[in-house]
Image 1 (tube, one colour):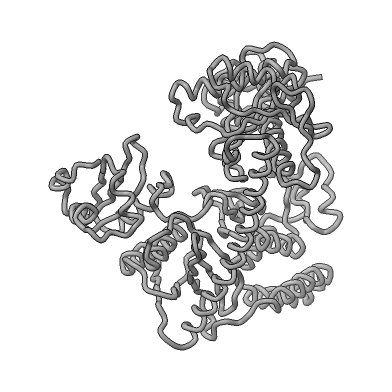
Image 2 (tube, rainbow, N blue to C red):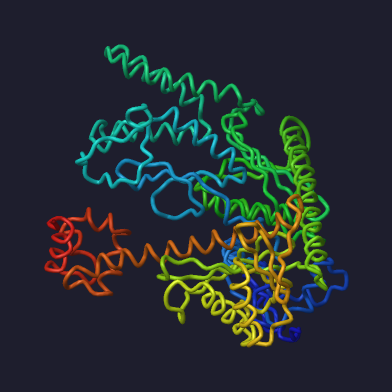
Length: 607
């Protein structure tokens, strides 16, 4: 346990403290106005919250970083939490998985993409969308209303020497690849898309009406009709949006609801007085934490990555560090931001409505999760019965092999805990010792390497399975069991699942175990086997694709490994290399004019 006497040397200055366990793993990150006083409070108070009380004995070391201000400490705290995702911090559940809509303003003819991370690349981002359905609906409207391109073609030089695609013929794209539309006109459409995503539908409709009238006056009736159809589509979208504020301003309204073991924070996005979107977010690690601390943590994590910050944020109750957070948001936005806790009136009713929606979503989510937990529990209990296991198989690991005629052979290891995939524990093994298409020996190698790593104390492999599932029949099972015996892990129950009849094979038994077709146990092992198969194929395709790219470049004289990697890093793909000019190729690190001409000639003069 941490020596509390060390705290005397901590500075009484703003900063961030980082708590670690006996393995050096970060378990909590916090900020403080005074590092000494804040850290001292963990070891002096006798009435600590339950969660904090359980954390303190696990603290072995505390590091700190001094900052010049509390706002700097808040920014650093957000970054460290996002990077380490500590066990005892309140976390947005799976926040890395929330998608964003990206407008590639850094391209000549911008596209619309769905991405998982926001980068400082000159593009414009909208989100995050916790409800992927709402995001897809927005994209669908944009695709129908605004004829922007969806292809991946490099349009730095147009027209291209190819015919326009199907989207042009069904009026979903204006074919900028054929120079059918001027860059400025295309960018005007992109500005319309941005206005739509910003929730400025009425302003966009008014603007389009002006352009329609102008097009009609110029006798460009065809273009006027296109704009008219856009206006009609946008008006239909607008009809669905509810007016929730009379001041017609932009604001976010945030409220939370607390359940038995989870918290839902609901955000209503109000733009120009209308509710344009709402998103529910689930938080974890909230047991025993006060409501205001939960809401504060959410606001910091949410707006740390939010591409847009409104002038006003309404919350349904008080938060911590209000003035510091306002100052931080103002720095991010570049203008004043106000956080309001309404006591009466229209804003109070709005906050209450958001809280009611948070409660309704949480009730639905908890009910659904309860049903899923019951199904998973039933499946594991059935498995224990059918396989005559001594313990419930809470952790199941599955192995599968994928290759092409024995080449680029790879093994996948997927992990399910409590009936759900635990993707952070997934592992892959490139098969090293097996020649040709030999799944039996490949399974043996992969299983052997997995459990050998466990014997060696590798943290990534320390958790052992309650049940090992091998994709295959008696042969694959036999070789997996040989690997386990060699490493003294033969006590781990192992089954082979043969795909054709879904028969389960166990060692020492000639007849297979046939699970009832309607059993939850069968559905669970099928799901795990299919996931292992999917993961193996994905890994194999990546290896095969990488090998194929390398093989093509290996045929070019004077292009060694270093230059091949430099070309791929700079130009992204074989297609990018093909399209590059000699000048562009020669500017790649490690390349010269002669090498660039060799690459260009290889792709353009090859018969």
